[in-house]
Image (cartoon, rainbow, N blue to C red; front, side, top):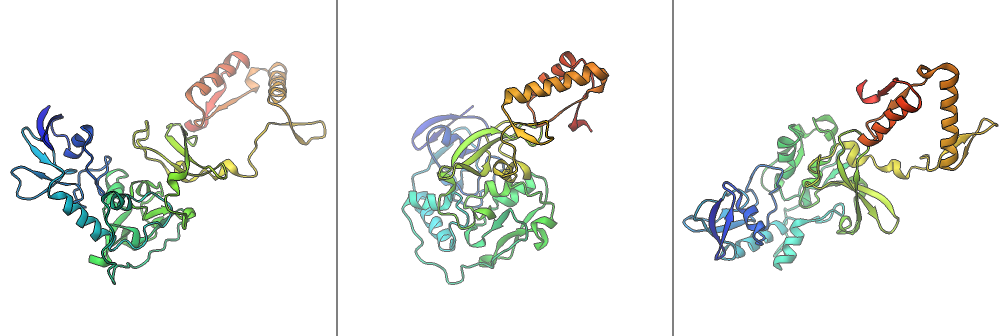
Length: 351
């Protein structure tokens, strides 16, 4: 542990800990826009600069590590610098709400009480349209924080996104200007989840009202698409009681907030009209008819027992699934071996 002074208070921090994290643990909030705990320190937006005794200039708290005896001030001259930086970003922030996602720049501006002093006449960037149907990008909401590009490179280990242009013409595009579908991108939506202004957003929520996502009710559950067990939040619209999007939190185990394209975007099956919502049993007329779970289980049990007793246990095979929990798969193999007396049980994941 190292000892340092933060705003006149003596605090302890882990050796090598980032200053922004040490401050947060001690109740001092330092705003950032380019920083994300999943990514390497960057210090690009300079919103988190603080005064450090002995330094000739303010230092970014998100890229500065604590050291013994450090004296730090977060409420000195850097406060005015932070306000100026926010005004500069707002002067080019022409589309603050392309898809109803939270906007950290707008939140910061409200907290600091600042507005754009002027809208630059050449602030508008060239629009970008992609033929994929899941994710959209609004350049006029982008603050070029580089979070999305760094996420694809550092977390996903691919080169899906990059910067294009310079100055007021700069924007984020898929590599070489291709479509997202023609790069290494897997449409996992990770870049969308780390975007601080909602510039990258779900296309199916384009035009949603401001703070639409924050008004949704989150229900934590486990993704059922594979056996990893990713923890997700089902975002439910209180007005319709329907799932409208899926998110995940970086604190969740075992996926650290990361999802695949299925986990993030393949949720419409929940409300599909063809989805079975009650058990069906085939009647004497050869047609399937709704019934109770008790009756369905009784009929299934009788059918399996008939095949076992008539043709032998090895005439019955059981397929397990990675979409079930470990406990459910354990019970399934127990049913096969003790109830049906067959060892013919297999998992679709091993084929």
